[in-house]
Image (cartoon, rainbow, N blue to C red; front, side):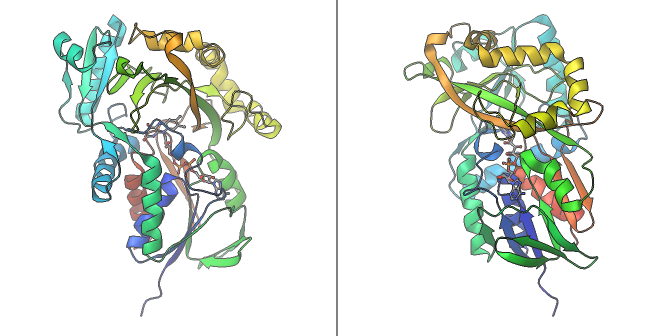
Length: 399
Ligand SMILES: Cc1cc2nc3c(=O)[nH]c(=O)nc-3n(C[C@H](O)[C@H](O)[C@H](O)COP(=O)(O)OP(=O)(O)OC[C@H]3O[C@@H](n4cnc5c(N)ncnc54)[C@H](O)[C@@H]3O)c2cc1C
């Protein structure tokens, strides 16, 4: 009889858990190691909660393929396990002539990526759907929606355990004891454990885990970008009904400050994209000398800031001054003002930057010996998580 394969997954965010869930369905003996006390305490539990379906991404890219496939799988998973979600559709709003042209390009891109039902709304249709939005042109993306990603992760863990998998919390993996062509040995506070393969989904620490576990230099470096949100105060939620997004600047992987109805009915606007001085720095005052030194001495970041100085300063200003933040929001809904908002939550994006200073737009997975590392999985990584898991299992692990 063939020996049961054993695979370790490092990282209990949505991607690590999706990989472990799919492996557990294949009768692999799976063990998840998460350094925190609970799942999803970083990106996966601190995002906009939006189901993205592939409007923005370069046709042929991994992001385009896995977001289209991923949203369908995620909705099916939510239906199967009664997870709160709503395919409410999203409106992308152009407010200038230049943005109108960019919106047409986006719509063509979406069509190439296989999205269905994309259509421009007439003034009357837009008014009926989002009475407060002002737009020169508005594109409806009906396949998109909102979901409770925390509940998705809770169910993934439940299923992993039902399939005889193990999930360890407060168990960081910082080194591989031994790696041969037959196995890898991990040493944690629980002792030594031997696995056939290790899949590492370290999010904000993906470059560190790569270099610590493989003992090789990571090909990409993570630079943390904090995204801050404002929350509508009670009584002002009617300013937005569904999802309202600007036309994003194609140079950046960030989608721009947008309005989101969260799954609990509350409304948020954000996030900006401010260089964070700590990888898990969720407050404006968060600071780590080591992380700051690490980012500021990276030639890739210095080149990025030099090439994108205006962008960097503008985002920084929107963090310091609520007025700057609200000006961005007012482009789409002029009828909002500072008195309607309070400071909301924040998340930090793990954004890979190449040594040349280029933001890495696409998902990136690297294999080194018996280790598979997810090095870059920015938005829409939560939407695409189940599809990313299948991609890793089919492409990087033997049957
Ligand atoms: C502000 C913001 C808004 C976003 N909005 C959306 C959205 O609306 N829709 C969408 O689809 N995507 C969105 N994203 C992107 C999405 O959240 C991420 O793509 C996704 O969560 C990445 O999942 P992950 O598992 O790779 O990373 P994470 O959730 O960051 O998980 C990585 C885990 O690895 C653990 N870890 C790290 N090192 C170790 C170690 N050595 N040992 C053990 N454990 C370790 C960490 O503690 C962490 O729990 C957003 C992201 C942000 C930050």
